[in-house]
Amino acid sequence: MAKPADDPRSFITQVSLVGRSEGAFKNLRGFDRKRHTEPDCVNQATSAFLAKLCAPELVELAEGVFQNVRTALAYKRKEIALDVSTPQAVLSAKDFTLEISYALDPAAPASYTVTRTLHSIKNGDLLRVAEFDAVFAGQFTAIAFALKKGVRVEAVIDAVEALAAAEDEKDADGSGQLRVDYPSDCSQCTLTVAGVAAVVVCDGATLEMRFAKAGSPRELVEGFAAVRKAFALTKDRALAGLL
Image (cartoon, rainbow, N blue to C red; front, side):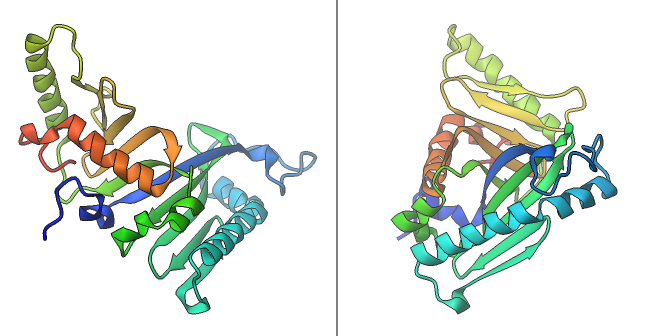
């Protein structure tokens, strides 16, 4: 029997779950306040400096995740592996892949970002396994995926603005309306719906749904299905297929 369109299992293999956290460069264990200075820009040299200094934290974090996953899901040695090549670690399990990476924040080079990306989930039913969900509880704030067919950001903006204008004529209070924000160069746009605790950021090639609260894999995928309904993007040709 075919899966309904809003069943998370119908699209889970197409998405990545993303979680981000931040830290101050000077708080890394390898940072010596007497000898080192904080980066004031992001380039090859400062990125290499971060890769060197973040090694202890990355190794500890990745090893902790490896042990938690191995124990919770009862994986055997041949079913799970960890490769650490600072500033990135890759945990490859038989059912999924998790990448952990450190990078300087371009907007604030004295800070770094730790990004966790869970992808290549081979079995959507894994989301229903309590042990899997518990291991990653509260770690992800976004669902991202590449668009099968790229879209023009300008076309998305125009379509949303047209829909919003049409809704303005129907509903004076503007409740439930789809809204769009974007920079002057239209390099990306951010879509929101009143009453929905998530935004959708589109840059033409990728789409990322960002939630206000961090959650587990199952919580985010269920939220994705709910938000997809709320956005109702399939009403316009330029928006069709985004969600």
